[in-house]
Amino acid sequence: MNTAYAVLARSALLVTLIVTSATAQGKPNFIFILSDDHGWTQLSFAMDREVSGSASSYLETPNMARLAQRGMRFVSGYSPAPLCTPTRRSIFCGMTPARQRGTEFKSEFDWTGRLTLPKALKQADPNYRSAHFGKFGNDMGASPDDVGFDESDGWTTNATGGMGASLQERGESVVKADPKLVFAITDRAIDFIERHSGTHGFYVQVSHYATHLQVQTRQSSLDMFEAKGPPDRAVTHAFAGMLFDLDQSVGLLLDAVDRLGLTDNTYIIFMADNGGRGTIPGAQRSLSPPNRPLNGAKHTLYEGGIRVPFLVAGPGVEPNSVSQVPVTGYDLLPTLYDLAGGEAPLPDEIDGGSFRTVIENGGMGEVRRGFEGLVFHRPLRRNAPSSAIRVGDYKLLLNYETATRPRQSLLFDLARDVGEQRDVSTEMPGKAEELEALLVGYLKSVGAETPAR
Image (cartoon, rainbow, N blue to C red; front, top):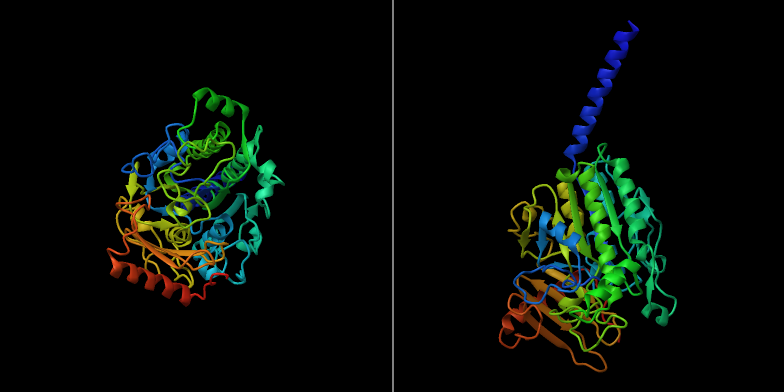
């Protein structure tokens, strides 16, 4: 009798485990890797194969290339802002920084009652578990707990990842066994994945400190690039080593997903919080700029400041595919909510749109948002306040009047001029007026901050 009961109990347990596993496999997992100050062209492969010189022959990012080969590269992938904190708030909340009145580090944004990315996944399925490891952000106005993460490293900032206390320290190259904590962050993420795989869906955000400001790298990586010879652009051996170390940590995550048998049910997204820096300490200024052939760099609304590596791999994503559809970080909340099976309408204040149909249709289609185009807004930047909008292939850059510069409205055809070298506003005045009206209309509708004078 006891033996029969034990057999029945084991059978019931087995059925429960099978049902639980099947339920877990029905909800996808999400791994979001966010690099810091990482330019669109700072890769060993081209985000856009049609753009000559966009890939680096010196930098080495084999695991980012491996991720691109597994999935889709978004040629026109954008960070919501040209610097870190507003981008991170934007990703969490699915809103443009303009709507948050958070276009710099400080923000008037009230997090109370707001839907965030981890909360949206729990709305889609209460069983989702979420974690945030690495850089949270300066002056975020909320903690990881407030945002809705079940686990985190706490409220971490640039200093946590090794930002020097002085400009001199920031410019130095430092050799470390775990540069920018890339491996410690990754180890914690893998531990979270191992603990939660096979039981319920999970979301883990791996927010790296690399390649922000102070250059840190392993000795072996530094030796490798010193032996390789002079760079092909204005970076240093140590900077190349730091990027390589970051890439190696990406490889560890990919290996863990494969080892745990999660590949067929896990989306892996990679993007940067803003474009690459315009100068790297110690680099030869006579070489090509770090972001070539893009114009501008971090802090600006030229392509070099906001167009970033943007990769997505996972179920239904065609391997080694390319999409020309413009997407941005504030599209992640509605996209992941959609992929997780969320059905209830999202709040009207969510600016992003789901690109699920794009990744499931070989990169073709459109992203439906509450307004047309992608909007960028940085009105508080000293001496260079600006806003921008991209609709289709056209981008309008609005430079506000300052004491040293008159108001300026520039129009670029990015399909023909990704480097933004030719203003076509005088040739296409109607298009320029149309885009400026859309831009100004959106900014007014959300009560965006105006340039400081």
